[in-house]
Image (cartoon, rainbow, N blue to C red; front, side, top):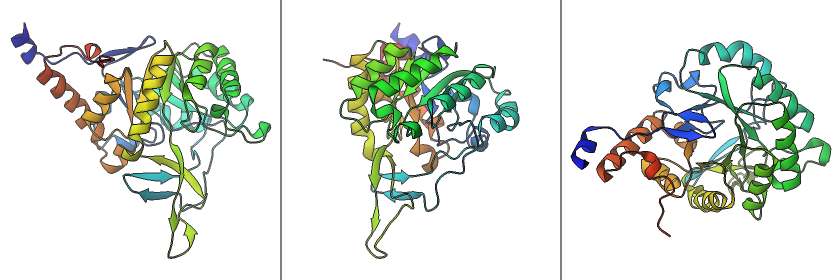
Length: 311
């Protein structure tokens, strides 16, 4: 039997709460535009899914520049969720996405509960969008600016309200900037999330000793890249063991080995972020690398690798 498996490519398909993916690799929101921007660099239909940058009710200009700074083993960004808005997305971006057979996951956010609900309602009626990813790393402007995702009660409330107008799979993307991520993970699971994605970026800062100024106009930004992978692995491991719904692992994945680590811990799929900015074809290489590793190990199905960590 083992000889046969050497000639047959391992099965890479995974099931995310009813959403069938050909493989577990997808871009992290905000690092891949709306998909078309990367179409010259890799075959979009090879991806497990395509995740759009975050969409809001109204177009958003984002933060003033400079809003990106390189750091040791990573980068800081304070883009400020710049996007075209849900209506322009439907008009200008959806026609391109309709040409793909890769499932599209739309990331979205709001500054108030009502904005989240309005965007979710519009996404529910876009056929090409097969699942939605709820970004709860945003400040609730009506509640003194507390970030929805850092308060389990606020996180559960937004998930619960959005759930009511959605039949599509609902992914809750969690912020790592909390004391105990499992409390928020359990709260969003109970509120109706189908899938959890973790982690978003860690809050950081960079300072220039020559100009004596902060490198980002916003002051702080989100740290991503290899520097955060150990933190992401720890949090994914905690969340996988705290909830019964599927988990998507994200944070510092630059190569196939990184992705395999998250899958080994029990993540059902992975998102690749900063690597896309370093090498636009990185996800192509990661998918091929996973295939090569499983073949070498004599593993015929990726689901036999997922969660197979020895205790």
